[in-house]
Image (cartoon, rainbow, N blue to C red):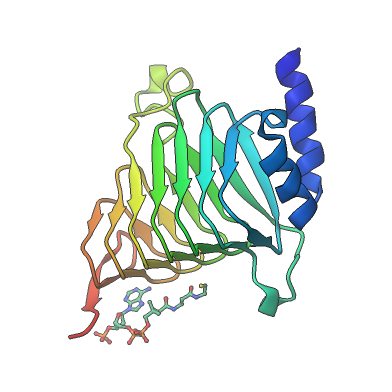
Length: 200
Ligand SMILES: CC(C)(COP(=O)(O)OP(=O)(O)OC[C@H]1O[C@@H](n2cnc3c(N)ncnc32)[C@H](O)[C@@H]1OP(=O)(O)O)[C@@H](O)C(=O)NCCC(=O)NCCS
């Protein structure tokens, strides 16, 4: 019952754009069901939906959407911190474009100065089991995702459970990442592979 009321409040907040929503979230964090902690000011040109029962910590100068694209386009950044122990951490100066979905069962960590293009999907578990009998009862293995400082994730990239993207690295548009991307690398394709080392 209480949870339903909180979720309704979420919906209300999620429909309020920008500074008002941020102010309410910062002053009255208990009003929304995931434990959201906004550090400093951000610029929200897109709607943000906070869902789940876990925590979401967002650093200063967080930018959602792109003002050069005309700002609000009817899409949404979906931050789903599913369970009580789930944790999404977003560092300082992170910019995330339209229609990005982050599904977190354990931990999704995004470092400082990271850029994420539009329509990116990041998940730290597959949400269904692979065995036919467990397809609906299992959520798959929880494997944390880390996107390190100053990485750039291009549009329509999919980042699968257990992926780690190194510092300054770039993921080319439309790639599917699974596993380790070393620092200063450009990865592309499905599965994404090294196509260039930055600085060489
Ligand atoms: C990552 C990116 C910026 C690299 O650009 P770049 O430095 O100009 O790199 P290039 O186009 O020269 O590509 C480097 C190599 O990677 C290869 N490559 C690039 N993208 C690839 C892909 N999706 N699949 C396979 N290979 C790819 C190129 O063929 C090239 O190989 P070659 O040197 O043997 O010819 C660019 O590929 C990209 O994804 N741009 C879009 C970014 C985006 O989504 N922006 C909007 C949201 S923020």
